[in-house]
Image (cartoon, rainbow, N blue to C red):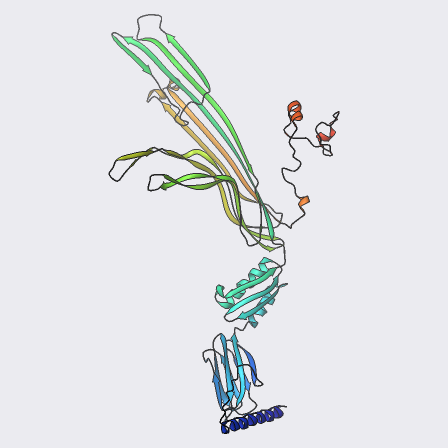
Length: 486
């Protein structure tokens, strides 16, 4: 077969040579262009990077030409054997000629990375996955499917290590497992506050010889800043005798005990696809002054507050979900507020051109947690917990006298405040699938405004429905009362 192909090739070259000689003798020149990769002598070769291939020629070669020696290098050891070495990733071609200048071989060469080792590692380290690694120039493309995100991430990391640069790896893998995660967060906080105030102020007036005098104590409640309106008792004494140092004496007793309890419950729910971030905010935004413009007007920037939730889930497998979670509950408060007084605006010459009213910037009471956890679907974990107790006491008294036993209590006022806080944040992820709209319920389902008659006679603000098993259905009214009849 090889001998027959050689004879046919020689015959074709002889016919072409005779035709060219005849055309030249007749004075007509014809130009023949041979395109690379087209013709009977054309072949293609996929050459791994930094590896060699051996080419066996049918006849003796006298000359070889490589269009880009930087990509592939050719060497002829014997007249019918050549070696090609892949130098760098790219494409080129090579031509082999015999002693008469006839084309023996037109070889199209493509030098790429050798991914057989990477493919073996993918099959061994990602069981159950159908992943194929393909080379595109100096890049690696991963195609196929993975049973979960963990296998897909493993394949991606292996390809990045193999390529030596993560920007040279493109992942087009599809994940077969469920990818949607719903995160349920419960934020429960209890705050207990106890405030006690007890103070006595004494006053006396009198006359000693020809000198009139007046003495009074004014002990304030410096912890709270004022008396919070509790028990107030006042007594006075008048000396019946007209002579004596003290003519009148009076006293004021103030006492208070206040106990407060604050319960905070927030349950934000949010759903996102694996690998993507989602954010949720139920609250609002309040303006915060950040500067002034050239005319003296205050410029503001809005800051969010309320119940916020943000998370990025990654489904590793059916029983493992990795999540980056950030959640917070914030509310406006006067504690820590910043007050800016009125300011005078002047021109370049120092003349007063107007005034800017003052503003009050409220503070924020924030409970925030941010972390990364790994949970199974339906499993719960305490993301954060806090037990805090804060005690404050202030004692305002007359120096020296308040240290006298028994009587010293009449010359001092006492403030006591105790704050106890307990906070728990619980997270629960679920792998979820879409469902029918009829299977979902909203707070507005079944709501209908009450009629004027129901509002006037029964005090209803919405109509009452009869549900089997409920107390409403067990009532026995005469007539269509409390139900919608169609």
